[in-house]
Image (cartoon, rainbow, N blue to C red; front, side):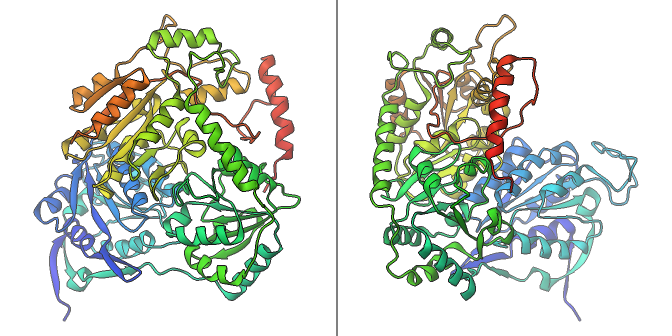
Length: 638
């Protein structure tokens, strides 16, 4: 007779989470680190009771915003190279709906997170309950159905015994190399508290093996022939290469074959910047060196990349008449992109098998790689000395944004700091192993072009979904992953205003993060996009009802929460603040006033295809549209 244990559905869930382990290269570790929660109606008396009564090894943290705590969980999984996760739970209705953006962020970035939104009543006895939407199409439809398009696996538990198959299927997805991402299991609030006699074997220790997938002989043969036939190959390092920990193999292939490396956002810091063959970020936000290389390449070797439009410059940056593609990815769908010869396998495992087969292969790049790298470092050095007061200073976008306009900002914000000089000063100061977190706006562009990664896995860029509000929540998640390293969130003022609540969570639990807020009084990145396409600045600057620039004391906000704050208007103030922050035990906050239009810009002519009006009464817009349409015709359509 099967031995059973009487538990509520919620208690069974917590017990199961405690028993999930992963084994990677013969090292076995618990897979679920803990649970983020905001207790509200529909969750506090069910899952809340289970967590309080017997959490096991699971750590549990009370978030301040459902989106924020879920983004922290996403960042944790990313920093842990997808080998450890947090679960996230929230109350019925709006609390759960708040997690949808985080689910989409995890989905776009192929990052595992277990989402446990509370649901309405399975029995429907008290319907409509508080915070329930009533859809006349079907009474079975609830808020949590919106998670379906942004989940790799979705289920709703309407009977306690359904929990077992749902969790088994869900964890198969969470621990899958090729299909990992957000798993959503919605639990009606009455079902959370229902009792069931669960078989004890369901709670036995389960080990999920993260075995590397090796390429077939046919795949290796095709790849080897393709590389040997190429004169100027380039390796595109994506997030999959980082998760695979293929650093040494990448360097060996690059050095042995004289092949340059270029980085996607997700691939940044897979290999440190000082590596001679690392030309930096590629694409719309890329370095001149990296983009020159991919423009000249006759073979692009994509390692763990999904080729988004910023990497490919909307499929215009490659010479499609001569360039071929070789992709290595654990996901077949991603491996097949750009009509490539594909290897559906782990990046590290593939390189280990491929390198010996290439024998003494050498590219025809010669010293071009090193000349371009040297030029890039010289340009970076020039930008670090580019001050607003210099006569040579020219704002990135001169159209409609004159020096007089900048002078007004300088006077009002009481600063002459440019974004690039601040960014580079931070890069030069922080510890080699400090982890930098950023996501949206112009700061990811600075990372692609300018940041020098001094240690592996220290550039934490979320640009798969470019989620505004990720930065501070993400920094908390990263700090939980690397508690002994300094963690910095680089965030624009626009993104800070959207979401910064997990700053309070970091303070509450004593998890030190350092928040570097770049305040240029507006959505600077989107303001650029407007003006590059013939529009005037409208709705993207913080101007009050009288048209005056708003001066917001963000430091006072953080100070009110309890952070150590610094107000920065000069480089000397910045350097002093950075030095002092290292002595602080708690969270620090830098309110850095910078001038708009002082971010770095592309100089290689890379192109981004965005939605444009094909006809306009505005002459400047129509002129830019005509140019854009011509450029669009040059782009590859598939």
